[in-house]
Amino acid sequence: MSEFELVYLFDESAALLGAQMDTFLTILFAVVAAAYLVADKLTKTMVYVAIGLFTEATALVGFAMYRTSHDLVNLAGEIRSLGQTNDSALAFHTLANEPALIMASVPWLFMGLLAVSYGAVLLLFFHVRARGKLVST
Image (tube, rainbow, N blue to C red; front, top):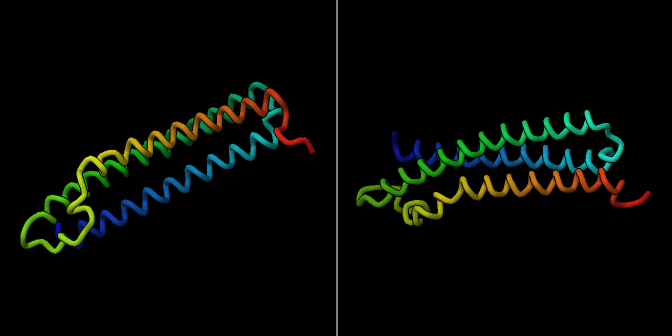
């Protein structure tokens, strides 16, 4: 694989990770809006369905984000190893001189963000359900 293809693949993978994050945030805020609007009116069965669908969507997007972020880590390692050779055109790239630990933490940062967001939305959902709407109308 040429250096250009490697950097292009890294850029495309980073864009894919961004799109996956956008998808998760869309799902997240849809559940926040649903929690505010109807959580206190749902039957137990519908609560199980709503939380089940949210959990499934979070898991699917989370697995995709985890795979993509691991691909980014591996591509960054390749860029780093090629960029440190004398005849490489990748020496200019930030990843050529970045410590491996920084890039290796990316999958765990995304998974941590996903887990905290998931938990916060569930807390909001059940808080609204227990107390009625947060803002009285």
